[in-house]
Amino acid sequence: MAIERINLFQLDLALVRPYKVSYTTFDSFAPLVAEIFDSEGRTAFGEAEISPGYSHETPEGGWALLQELAADMPGLSSADARKKIEPFLETDPTAASVLYVALEMLDDNPQLAVNETTRVPLLQPVQSFDVTAIPDEIEKTLSEGFKTLKIKVGFEVADDLARVAAIQDAVAGRATMRIDANHSYSPEQGREFGAGLDPEGIELFEQPCANADWAGNAAVAEVSRVPVMLDESIYGLDDIDRAGDIAGVGFVKLKLKKLGGLDRLRNGLDRIRSKGMTPVLGDGTATEIGCWQEACVARHAIDNAGEMNGFLKFKQTVFEEPLAFEDGAIVVPSGYRPTLDHDAIERLAVSRAEVSTAGGNRAAE
Image (cartoon, rainbow, N blue to C red; front, top):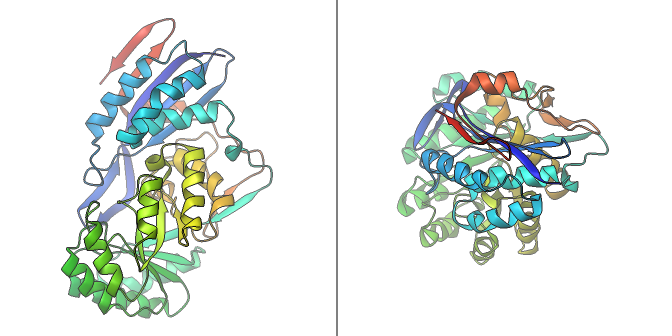
């Protein structure tokens, strides 16, 4: 079995409503997608969104690297192709994961084999910043079956605390809450916010300070009234081990695109638990592709709400048979192996590239 062709796409996917985080507001996402075809007629795919401001990777750099890596893959076995990609999982994991995960899928990675119908409960973000609109949004969210909510902070500390309190009042003990600063507080702000929280119903406080500011995040964890979770700081096992040595860090979140592969992700989740912390999993910017793949891993590796809810944010679907959502959960039927909706992919693509054993390279912007 050899790789015959790879199609690459950069999509423009509009959101149902703007998604506001501390460092920007998103109206759309631009995921990178790869579909691989082999000599036996099999196909597989991977995807990842590179969000500006989240890490050192950029959408432009990721698109260029994806084309560079794909250009050397036609004619190779999937095992040899993975070996070529592996070094880039350490330096540019998000971009490299697009191809690496597709290769794992091509090889029928057992984590994607769902032999009985599986439900993965999800969280849902609270998106209202007008406190008068919060009660209605909470009621709607709870009616849809969600039992865990995410609250974005990282703006002004006093305003953030007031908004969290308003959400707590509206929730009234009916759901668990996660707080996420998206690495936007200074250590001083993070300490003020964490110490000022009413812990009632709050599960964790995610990534208060900058990715590389381990001392700042530790200082926040020292005084926070709820456990801290690290996300943006975590890219591999060494980072997980480092987090495990910080008092007050009780959770670590992983994403498939950051660990780079399905098996690497499972190993990371197991490592978190071995260090006495609780693993959290999920990418809120992923399409159905990444959400399905993460849900397959989640069914064995976590016992809390998954954060792979990105597919609910989009106006469009990219699967022929859309990923199912019911009563606050992803539902993966027994035997489910999705296929891409190629008409939708072509319609949504803003950049395309193709490499093959027969025709060399073709790119269109």
